[in-house]
Structure formats: C-alpha cells, structure tokens
Length: 241
Image 1: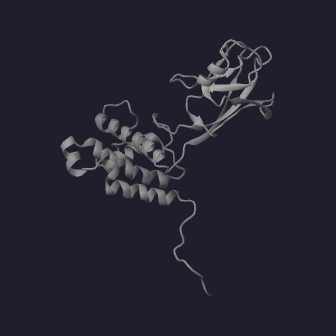
Image 2: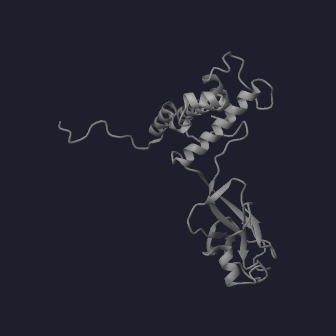
Image 3: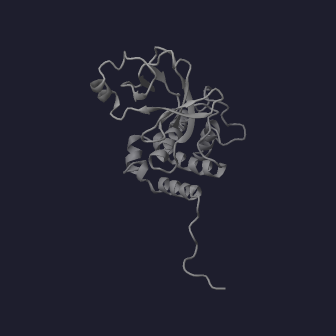
C-alpha cells in the first residue's frame, strides 16, 4: 500500500470520502485539502509511533562513500537514521564491489576525544584509519586521517538503519502485506479523528490522549498479532493420540 492509498483509506474509514470517484489522485489538489493533510500527518505520526513502540523496526540498507584526497567530511545517505552496529566499521570494497578486510574504525570517544588526543586531527593526512560523527545536524561523518592520494577513489561500504518515513504519494507504507497495512490504517484513522477534533472534544473523548485510547490500542494490538512470526499455541500440555 502506498502513501496515497493509505490517505484515501483513512478518509474513507472516517467517512470523509464515500463515492466511487471521490478518491484523491494526489496531494496537490484542493479537494478535501485540510482533511487529506491531517490524514498525512496521522499516518506519519503513527509510523513514528509503531517504530518507537518496537512494533516494527527501521529497514536496513547499505551504501558507499568514495574518498577524495584532501577531503575529511562525507555525507551519508539521506535516509540514514543510525548505523546498524554499536561500533560500526566502514568496509573497503575492491574494484568489483566486493568487501575486503580493510576497514575504517569508529573513534570510540567521538570527535571531542579525538580533538583532545590528536589536536591536528583535521590537518594530519594519510590513509584514513578512523571515522567520527561531525558535531552538526547534517548526516555527515569525518575521517581521521584526512585521506591522501593513496586513498583517493577508494570506496567504503557502510550498513545502516533506513528511515521508513512516508512523504511522497508513491512511498510504501512500511508493511509487508496488505493485511498488515490495512490494519495499520485502522490505527491511523483513530489518530486522524483525534487530530480533527477540537481541543474541547479531545478532552471529552480522549481525556488521556490518543495513545491511551482503547480503540487505538486495540488496533495496534491486532497489528502486533498479524506481525507475530510465530503464532501462539492454541492449546498447552501434552497431546495424546
């Protein structure tokens, strides 16, 4: 199910659209503009909620950076959330894109510790041996040592947790089956109704907020049941034939 289909389903479940030809074809039109924007927000918020609750994980991916002589800062993929491992390495690839045993290790103390240990870390050049997060909001890392001519053009692979945020009409809602996605939309619809209500209505109908609403909790509980890889046994104890 893509984002547009999810928004249409929220609007149908909330009785905002009903006819056969009322479905939205995009997010740029004026039809049900305020409602469809709230539906988008509800789905995006619910994606964050199910990740925070551990119902679904981030996706996994691998990308590469190409070293340039004299350049110490490199931008990670735009969908990057975090590295997969607690102490991740950058893995050098050979000319065929295969992994080698050469690695760039994480500087365990971070950039602050590196600055104390190696005051000239931004000037010292040579084959890169360690990486660190830059102290900025951008998704960049720095390399120590600053790559020199011997590292120019070297390709390093990194594994990371990939964002599952949806924003474009064609973005896939992060569930494997349609059944799971449809049940997720049930939870989104409860959140949409909450967001669409006035503050007074919210206090009357959801005094403890949407996260504590029984219908919303029930929708997420059903979703968890669908996502469970091993179904619980329906009977316990020995079976005699």
